[in-house]
Every structure is written in structure tokens, then in C-alpha cells.
Length: 136
Image (cartoon, rainbow, N blue to C red; front, side, top):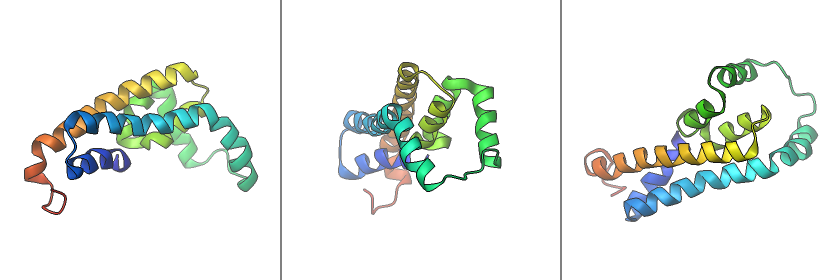
């Protein structure tokens, strides 16, 4: 959530319009989604397997990811991504469980758009009362 909320806070602090901030926030998340959707397998095989060859397969963290995937599927993971999993974590989770690339991109776009409107709208409408004077 922290990474995703920096976009709306930064847009508000820079004096951008609400629509511009929403578009830039969605574009930021979708950049990560596209990068990992198209190059995630390459990154895993070339980087992760090379630097972490003896990685434990059944860790507590991995079991938690499996539970999330089984319980919610791709739509649930996409909905939780900006709030809980971060764009990188949610995309990697979906890719590692074999989500189809086109569905992954669609669901992540819908999630990014909805959460961006919620976060940006909240910051723009309540920013004067909530955010410190340094950001304004």
C-alpha cells in the first residue's frame, strides 16, 4: 500500500490535477505489471535461480501466498495488490501460479484504476486537513 499511495501523495504535492494523478498512478502500476508479465519468467530463471539456487520451496511466506491464491484466485489477488501485496508482489504471485497474461493485465488494470481513484480522490478531497503543511 505504501508504494502505491506515494503516487497520489506526490501528485497532490506537485500540484497536478486529480485526473493526471490518477492516470500517472495507474501507469506506474501497469508499468510494473507489464514488465513482470512479459519478462517475469526470464527474470526468475536468469536472476533468482542464479543468485538463490537453494531457495526453500515450502516456507511460511510461500504457504501464505498459496493460501491467498487458492482462496481468492486472480481477481482477489489483483484486488489486494495495491493495498496489501504491492504491484511487484501481486504480479509475481499471479505469474508464479500460471495466470494467463491477458487476464492478469486486465484484472490488474481494473484494480489499479479503482484503487487509484479511491486513494487519489481521498487525498485530493481531504488533503488539506490530513496531510502536513510540508506536502502542501
